[in-house]
Image (cartoon, rainbow, N blue to C red; front, side, top):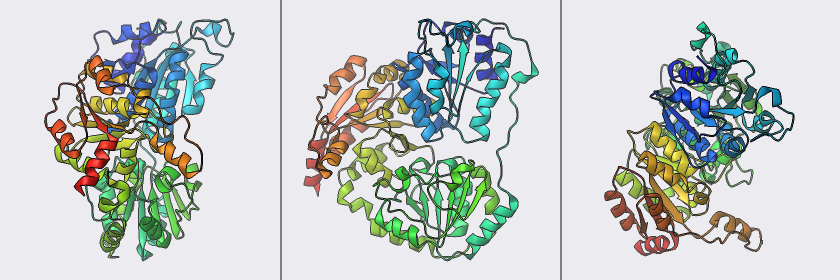
Length: 536
């Protein structure tokens, strides 16, 4: 068996990989020999950035690592942006690339696709980057990669294989079997101290982040026992279920939630980095935790970032929630549901003028696709949806507006989510600016017959940046851009499209959609806003 064949065999048989994203190149041809006759699905994006975003969406929707096969040089620099997004949000992604022959590395001989050091270029957006120098060490390197995914803080891992190793023979070894790994649990004494502090709390608050998405039952049980209002970040949406009476949603940047947080005497933060894109998205430094802060995170260093911690515990979020729950056999009554309801009433999101254009949008989507996974780019409907949307389960709502904040994420990530969850409808929420970064992935959706609904908010440019320019007294430059005819482009790819100008027309388009491929629904933002204003 060759190194390339062993790679595919181990990905499939040892680690359960069922989908690969990549564009074949002359350097990676031998990897495709290993795929011949395999039931692993290979998806060909139209750009390596699209491959990375697809792998990201696949991982978020499934909980399993997304895997990419990428060519040397330009393929790797193309995927770097997607890796940056995955790194920021701790998404498991395995990027396997080719690299030039071992005897030429670093010599600068002008070889095809050559970089002075591909590993050095990519290491800044990877948990680790490794150059395979001996084919027989492949099992060990793969085990290390999946240990990052399953036992430490996840993120992208890069393994580059010199092209002269693909056909190198490998020896059979017991190391081809995957090791059994268990994530760390917090120190029992630390957990007992956390429980003591929470028992004594008068006005507790819980903050749950994306690290908790694999433990919804434990999360729901614990917040109920604590009777504590709970902020669930954007990446944790659906963790408590739809419209849970203790769920404040991802609204930590809004005044009523900030006031509650500032007055909380004990705060439990689990699996969240407490970063500004979740807690201070208005970027004014107004989110403050003045009480006793208990943090639980897999990453020791994360415990001391962003907020002053009183008690920090290192451990897996899900296991920690379960162990902490054992300290609360009975519910501690603290008017948590009443406190949550009062804050939600003060927020009054459904009637907030800032969201008036988007309440009908999400109500219509919920009416026709109540179980849908909503995947977003950085665009106005997504910014509103971060506040408005409530989902029935985790891994049903994610977007690029957190952390790295790249444009072009929404469409390819939605395709990855659809590949991971063929049992659920998927909606891509994109804007006319951001979608141009990865518009060509409509061709991939058509080719793979993925029934993703692409909702395109067309407001003729970079509206968010216009507002920032206006607010800061900067003349509008570079933000009023020429848009193509999106419906014609979509049809050229083989994707049907429809233009809508009102919630009623959106409802009709969703009711009439077919499920044998993608559908583009372009919303004329100006007409939509007029229709919504008229309906009021």
